[in-house]
Image (tube, one colour):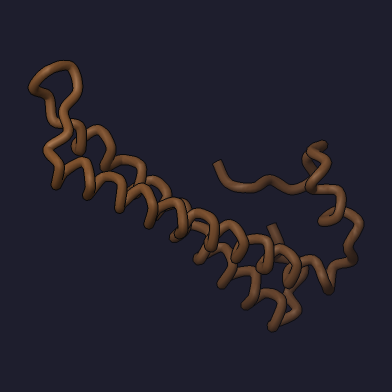
Length: 103
């Protein structure tokens, strides 16, 4: 599930306090922070998975470990892609000044 508006979480307080004009640029910036973190985690998880593959790591005897690890870089990559899309949409709304469609 993606981010929700008007939730009681404390980190949404800034978003709710902002006026309509700065809300989208701040949201786009926050999305870019998530993109940076998720991308770094996807890269590191990919390196870890590749290392497990190249070393032939196994679990529970003869079961290769890398097929179980591959979900991590894929998942973090999908998170990064979602928030890239989110950041672009928010930036486009900020440029267009379309506060009614924010959400």
